[in-house]
Length: 398
Ligand code: PMP
Image (cartoon, rainbow, N blue to C red):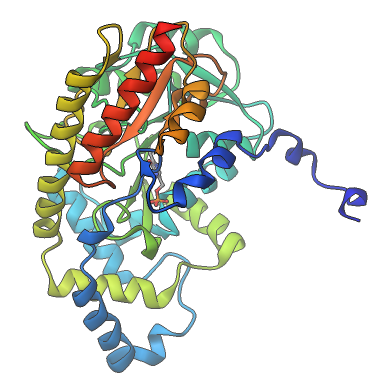
């Protein structure tokens, strides 16, 4: 009987998400799902990957199927460093990079490295649900920093840094955030780095969506503004290549990376050798930035269709953002509507979304919704938003 097992105290804070249960039905093929954060699988370069995978086994099979170093496959780390140097104007080498099992593992290792029970994580309000889950294992307190369309409010951030004890981390997703789609202004990024320096706190910049920009020029990463080695940057190939590869990375000062390596070694020894070598060969043979242009074109159109249909179908009182990149749009309903209740109704109409309340670590904001636009084709986006509009109008009528 499992009831007699003596689980760790930390399990008390880990609960199954009620939404996850509700969303199990989204696997039905006729469901129009705006719920997940899934890339469009029709854009995965299947034929190329088939060739690459066969070549890795044929040409380097013995090494590819062997154990390798915890840090990761050196040529891949070098390529990642070069990509970051080119895109962000930083000066990284392989020594600044640890390959992880997706950036989700980077979040878990970050919790392991920084958080004792009762320590404080400052985060945006709302923030990435998976980061709340990853950090929760280490039993911190989340303190939400007031956030507007430009990023964290620097005055509120300063006040919290001055008054809240035991702050260990400031966790941010500055480019096309999950869940809001917001992109921070340069000024807010600079203010964040200045405050982190002043108060000696680490900043974790989670950056899965920076390459998925639909318009205007990129804003410098928080990492590139860092002068004191306080910023830890999490990257991933999940949204620009394939999430099934589970390849991400942690980038930062060599001294910090060394600590991450120790923790990763204890966690899983290393990320899959064969998968790292496949990705490395893919990057040798093909132009990933060209692939990304193709992905961006498709997602931009899907974003446009979603926003256009929201404008047509949503009642006046409903507010929503037009994200300039990423995978998500954020919807705010009138205060008295509860998105969890609406989800039950909309699932009956075969439309799914994530109620935004779950992205606020301290609760509240139940009148918000996160809509993903990358995973459904344009016709299904149109139809799904139309049905959602109807569900909301009916809820407003009672
Ligand atoms: N951070 C953010 C903000 C995300 O949205 C995601 C993916 N949903 C992740 C990290 C994890 O991505 P992966 O582990 O696939 O790299």
